[in-house]
Length: 153
Image (cartoon, rainbow, N blue to C red; front, side):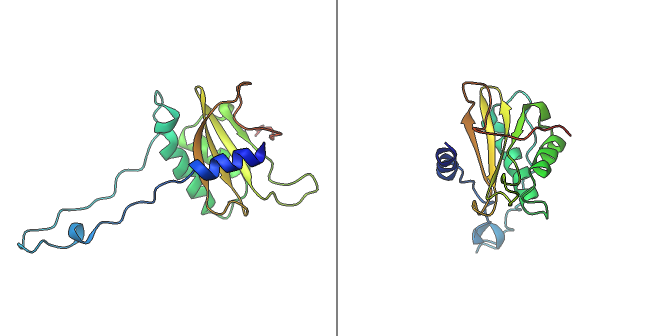
């Protein structure tokens, strides 16, 4: 089942990179009039009454920020950062950072249940870049298949 989740994440997890202004946006037109000012958009914020899809930009931004940190393979770091961003800790799941024999996990997954859907992230050495997607919640009301660690901190 992990393979099917990984495949689903790989197939649907492509997120757009911020666009780079085209030369026409950054240089003055031939007529000599000033070029339009290009300003970065504001950072995404939680939409409390919104859909999981509407909150995916915040989830993805938090995931990318933790991935860029020294704690990139710590499930707790993702949970803590998502809580700081405004997600409900009681709606989260995270897999273990280590295998049953104590080796670092090849990938870790973390999720936030949002209504009938889940925001799911996957990171780790075998994943490459972080992957974030929205998927339907499982029939038992959870987001991740298999064993997850208690979020008891």
